[in-house]
Image (tube, rainbow over all chains, first blue to last red; front, side):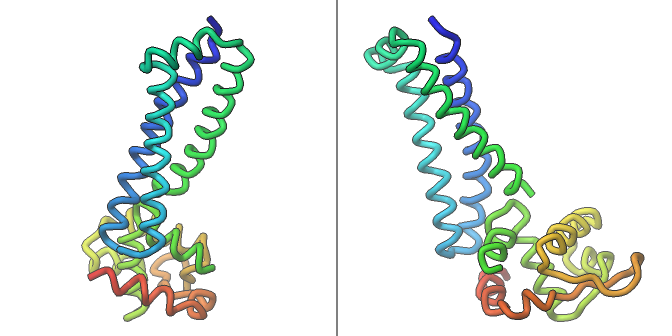
Length: 100
Length: 91
């Protein structure tokens, strides 16, 4: 049992928190401005929120998939972690520019 | 510039207040104090928004440090149609 999978789970959880914050701002702005741009940002945030929720579900809750991932080669778990961490970096930068 | 305008004015947490500031200084250029008064916002909030707007070359500062007034930048003037489109949505 490698630590990579745990890091991937935590990263998915943190991504969800960041996306809740971003979506809060973008939903509010859409309600105020009703423009194509604000609609796009809102949908972008909400879709990535779902994406991370699905990831967390697959990594931790789904009985078949989480067992399969836990028993997979550590290199595969490491790759999944890298994807989550890169997304975390992207979202953290976005939150930094948006929470302003 | 148009992408910056959309993001700074409608993509961020303080977007709505920044649009109100743009509207106010378009009507009549004024200093941070007067802006805070007429928009009923905290002085430090207004200062922060003005810094962001200045950072993105959306407003320009005229006059000395204390009591300097703010005006829409030349750059934003050439894209004023976008600003108007955004302002229409704010009361």
